[in-house]
Length: 72
Image (cartoon, rainbow, N blue to C red):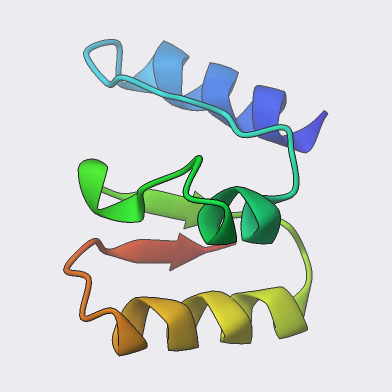
């Protein structure tokens, strides 16, 4: 899957990085508080869905989270 491929690429090129690919629906994990974005140094959104990316951006802004997000 795309998340595994991206995680493997980062691990190969930045061996000290700690990666946690998310295979469930990110919006559900965030809303159900299974995933706390502010616990991470960086989030990469590679879902390929502009509506989700806009929702994620609005969520981060409304919660005033300081985690940087890369949209890929």
